[in-house]
Image (cartoon, rainbow, N blue to C red):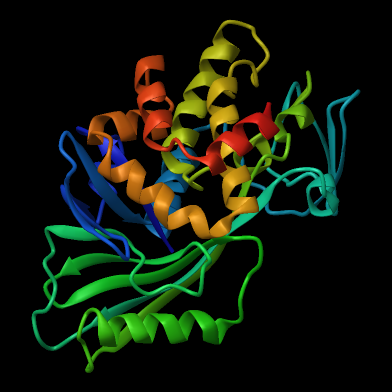
Length: 331
């Protein structure tokens, strides 16, 4: 698996990054946009490299101990963790387990970002490694929000991935059929080798993860609602939230204080409501988003760092009956 994220300037994980891009293409069924990303860059690093780096750093710290075990339960009032091998007490528990209520939840909006990708290699030089395809809707599965993106790693190697933003997963062969169709018909490649595959699914949801954090237990990661509902992005958001937790601890505050920004949570709810009720609108939404806003405005908004005037401009670019209905239903 690979981690992808947008970042301005030099980042703390740049020494692990496999590839960066400063240019992107967006294709809808009606238009093509060529996007200059500066001062941002789109970065890709391999998950295993990131995990190994973090484990290597932490293993050298005397006050860290790694225990491989399965958690059975926690008791908040005595801050205790029960596992198969032992029981552990602590001043505070950071818990990445998804709440059981999430699986039986039918009140929240739940969209799944699910995907499969091939890293392909060709004999001929067919890719431009300086530009990646952010979204391509020219081949999609019916009226569902589904698209392909392409990350060229070199002139003859690229990650090609088919992605859905919808309510239901599909069978393995469905991803394969669209990937092969895209590679053949739009990339015009007939001879290639699949050297790696990746697949996964990411929740895009309005589920109230925040309420499961308490005085003695802080839910983190997906279980803490750290995956941005409207995009599925989590890497940079997680980095910021960890910094916020450390700041809270230094000031003797509740670790979970201030982790969720309510106005951006509201924006995400509106977006997810549109996708849930009218999934075919996804292509139009992203076409408007990328064609009517500046790069810096868009990425500040996605990073939850935008100002109100920028947010109003973005809302204006997405003005439509579907968004009006979703807005008032969310209110």
